[in-house]
Amino acid sequence: MRQSYTAILERDTEWEGRFETEPYEAAWASEAVFFVRTMAPSGLTVSPQARVQISPDGIHWCDEGTTVGINPDPGLTSARVRHFGGWLRLAGDLPPGASVRVLIALALKE
Image 1: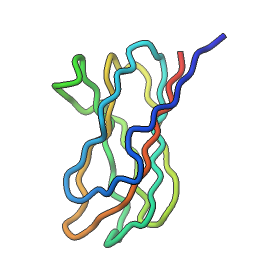
Image 2: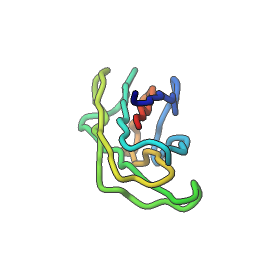
Image 3: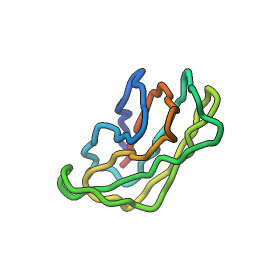
Image 4: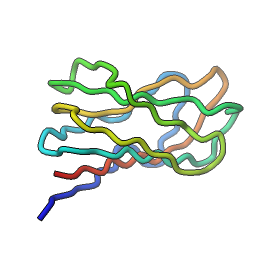
């Protein structure tokens, strides 16, 4: 039987400017899905991208190559990731004057 776990990385968190989610250790999993739910976006006229980042230790980070759009309207987007090593997080930048409240879930499966 496969094992799975869903972690909430951000709950009703407001992002402005540069952002990073809480890092999550997921070395046991073989696949991951980030779910980005936008609530109450303000000043977003385009859909900025959040980058999936990976880390061997949860301290030093590099971009994995996958991105997920941040809706300029309330809604849900997702990004699938495989072959990610030990730690995962999302990072990105919002345009000046823009902000968004988010709920970020990370679904992991072995």
